[in-house]
Image (cartoon, rainbow, N blue to C red; front, side, top):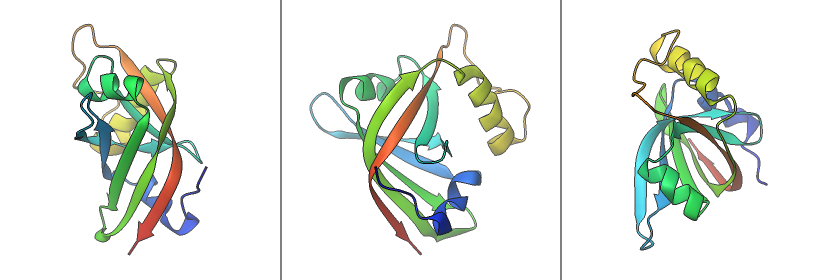
Length: 131
């Protein structure tokens, strides 16, 4: 597993919007803006079961993530890797923490009826830092 350079790890602590790219069944790329977190060596993304990205990573765990520093968009991380773990455990609490980070809200305000939150842990295999 590749490491995110310590001099760029602060980007993941900020409310930085990332773009998660997954692979569609025909091999074409699909990209979604996402909130991003890390647990140290791995990236963590929270989504809902059944979405296109959810279906894609369950079929093919290869992903790419790009994230720019919101204070300097010319400073960025580009990561390719694999989803190494998919779990619902802790996903509801995690989305509330992300709502605090990104919105200043104590609770995630966009939950849909019947929505089941899911966490994706991404193991970096290639890391490029620029800026």
